[in-house]
Length: 463
Image (cartoon, rainbow, N blue to C red):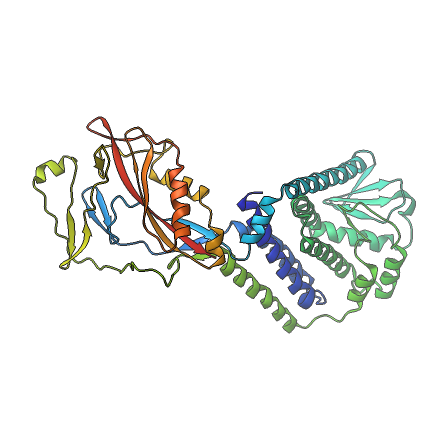
């Protein structure tokens, strides 16, 4: 299983668990059934989408533009945008364990296949009942009479009843119950839940919230049937008498929930309006989960007490630039900047040339390209291949690493070295990945392939 799947399982699982517990502890016994339905369905949708919601907040470093050369306040040449690497101290060890055990993937796929086949079988059952039996349309709802003994059940705009029981006592109330399921669109909820079961079958909290939603459907239908002309006592007796007949699980039916719970809710006094304030707990939970999992504050990637080379913010008020031949610079030839002085202080000084046989260029007529793209394509490749070192996670180490490298005239990545790092393990991982880079299309200057140098910052941040 890859990182995305593992993160989805962990984050959606935690979210479902918290929302389910809030419902069972505070909301299940309340009679505001419509609000509970919104809460339960919203909890499922939010938990599914949460792992895919990410907001990054960080400050860009100030830069000075000198013709085609960008020199940041760090003083590094050809500085690319920062690559961010994240690791969760909670899920890091879990993810490592899951990735190391092959059978888990097999078991998950086996379970997914099983529940897909179960869903397909139940859907075919319903389809066969629709195609093989007579249909009577009443108030835009299709009533299908089937031969076997069963209490009424519904599926979207279809209501199924037994031929043997269509004139039995209480049939009017049972039909009214199923009409409520149809009117309130409960089958849409059921279909979504059954599809999600295929992928979330391993999560016990998903089963709990699924059961709670089905129970809520029954509470809603019961409350829709119980009008002044319907006897509450007679309806409760009808529930008891219908408790032993079964219907397809994929359908809404008269006997899904535990009869005892439904009878208790029928007899329950309506919850006061102040009880709806309990829903604010769900709002607080949503906000907390959003902040914990979705918002990634990269304003300060992290500190390490062992950092010797501190970086200070620079406010640039004026820039002085001198060249021997300004006209040559305007023709996009090589621009050589020895130093940059800001308010009397040298913030950039030309670094010595690398000990190599070929000249190293910073600014060229045609930039080196990576796999048909630009340097951003390389950044994305680095992001996908970097792994947060376990030792750094264990010791709570985070921070930024600057790595310098060059792409030579035959497209190889060479001269890879760490310029600055908060910890050797982070620097070693950055060098490992960049050194393993596939070949580039080399830079060109005056039609000739040349060697070009870059600096890439990599920010390692613990969640």
